[in-house]
Each structure stands twice: as C-alpha cells, then as structure tokens.
Length: 141
Image (cartoon, rainbow, N blue to C red; front, side, top):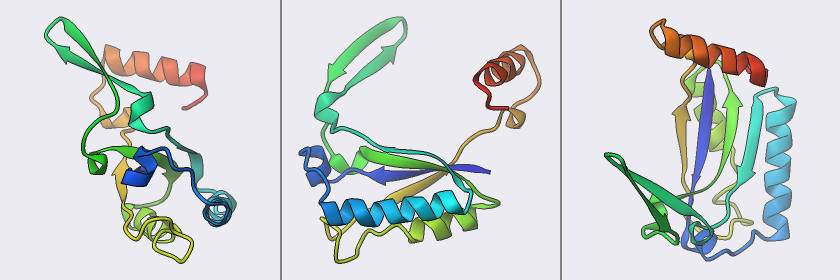
C-alpha cells in the first residue's frame, strides 16, 4: 500500500523560513531510516504558497489565482511517499517524524496520512488501460 504523509504548513513555512541545521540533520536521519527500511519512495519540501498559483475550474472557465493563500493550516509544506503493508504501519512511521522535539522550530506540527489509489482499485475500462500503459512508460507498474 502506498501512502502520502503530508506535512501541514505553518506560519513559519508560509513565511519562507528555512529549517535550522539541527532540524535538517534530524530530518535527514529520519529519512535515512525510511530508506533503510525500504519504505521510502519519494520526499520533498515545498516552497511557500506565495510562490505558487491555483487554477480554478468552473465549467469551461479557467481562473488563475496567485499565492499566497489564506489559512496556512489548509496548506502543505512537504510530503513523503512511502510504501507499507498497512495504514497502521504508515501511522507508526509518521509518529517517528522528529517534530515536537527540542529541534522543532514550531511547538505544533501535523502530518496527514492518505493512501494512494492503485490502478487496480478502478473498474476495468479504456481509462484504466491508458493509465496502465502510461505507468508502464514511466516504469511504475
């Protein structure tokens, strides 16, 4: 099962504050643990929403809204993609993120865990066949 562990944004991350060296070292050690356990697929941090945009779809109309966006708690500042045997295992990995320790830059942090769909989760059909073909080209099946 594949899961995305989503790091919720904070006022600090939305302000563009970079993590301290101690935070980067602690996160690096955690990331190495994920990699050594064979569960890590991908990870990265995101720039603040002030450097991004949203595209809103309403019927055939497309509207571009430049950041920043309100409500930092509704935004994300980074993620991990992991592959585990269960949601319970993904939760255990998320609980090990070194937030809330003496190196954390903010006293409160949140990681949301969401399972990714696999192409097999969908009913057979042309759309699924196309997705599988694209996955083959990308080396993801």
